[in-house]
Amino acid sequence: MGTTKTEVLKAERDAVIAKSVRTAMDLFVAEATGHTIRDVEGREYVDFTGGIGVHTTGHRPESVVRAVKKQLDRYLHLCVMVFNYEPYVELAKRLLAIAPMKDAKSAFFNSGSEAVENGVKTARAYTKRPGVISFRNSFHGRTFMCLSLTGKYRPYKVGFEPFMPHVYQASFPYHYRCADRHDASECAQRSLDTVEDIFHSQAAADKVAAIITEPVQGEGGFIVPPKEFFPGLRKICDAHGIVLIDDEVQAGIGRTGKMFAIEHFRTTPDLITTAKALGAGLPISGLTGKAEIMDAPVPGSIGGTYGGNPLACVAAIENLKLIEKALTNAPKVARLLERRLDEIAEEHALVGEHRGLGPMRAIELVKDRATKVPAADEAKAVQREARERGALFLTAGTFDNVIRLLPPLTTPADVLEKGLDVLDAAMAAVERTGR
Image 1: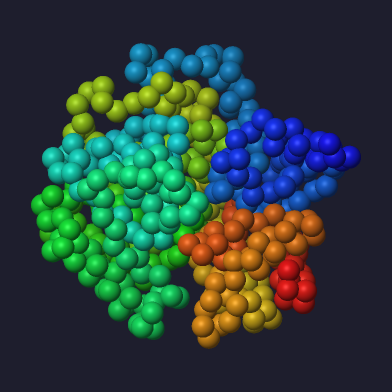
Image 2 (image 1 turned 135 degrees about the horizontal axis):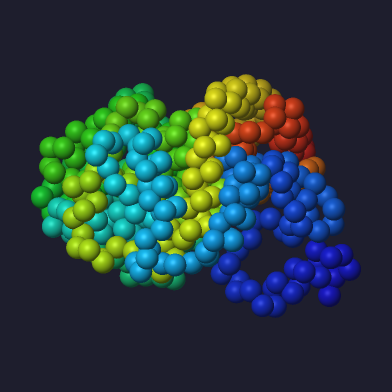
């Protein structure tokens, strides 16, 4: 048994929690407010993890907390499959008012995985086809259909085979690692060609119900596709009657500086999945899409006991108001992050590339800029060093060599600067010591 409170709690955790539930940060949180986390030892940290993209408006926004407390005095759980209640309808109305497609409807669930699962089910019901195309380097969740769609093997898929049939993977336009050093537009076209290849080699186009992709690959390392990619994907879907599913679980609801990341690409999807930032910390996800598609499954086939529970709905309603206001600050956050990451990239040879869309930013670490060999161990070392210095970052990427930044859009500039100073110093320490 350890001597610090953290050591004691960690020993207790290891004794009772399954090893398969991995925790990135070796600390126990006592309190989280706004952009700051305080651990049980009293240490404070600038939080760039955002609950993996949840806290776009910071930890425990006051108006969200008030709305949830008020709802607690009315009712906790009813189940939308048994009773109607106003927060469920009100949240749908608010989402439809900002959705990129017209004449849309919504349904709500508990997690991003559930939203993706129901997106696939809805597309299959609408098209009467079995096939689904996803992309390499993607992440869509941890249920069996979502794992089947996910384009990263370790750790998500290890030991869980076999996966769902009728799922096919195309290449995502990861321009930094485009082997033949194509320009961005050619990289996009090569990716689109792999979609067409599937029609000839694995599944005829008229057997494909949906193509699903993230507008910015999240777990894949914040990979932003070239601007030609989504219009090209839309063209393929239109030509073959395929439903285009836009998985915005991590990139959506304000994270990229627009309410939906797909808005950057001037493309209208058929279905959109949302979760994470939607509920400001309460578990809720949504599937929003064209009404004729959303109405295709038979009544009673979509739902769940806790899906769209009242507490999460009122939290999401209030949080959407906050995000609409926070979006006005997003360009300032994006510019500050981009400027500082430019400086960090220039200063440190470990940085192969920094990239992102709006305030959704990341740096990819490599052992050598010419060979681009991924520096996964160094990324973990930078994460640890930054934590010791007072800032929290997550890693990501197919090769686990990407450090991602997910600060609240409401984070003050001086706090962002402080956190980035820590990242800069952590990079220097790792380059100096090699660990």
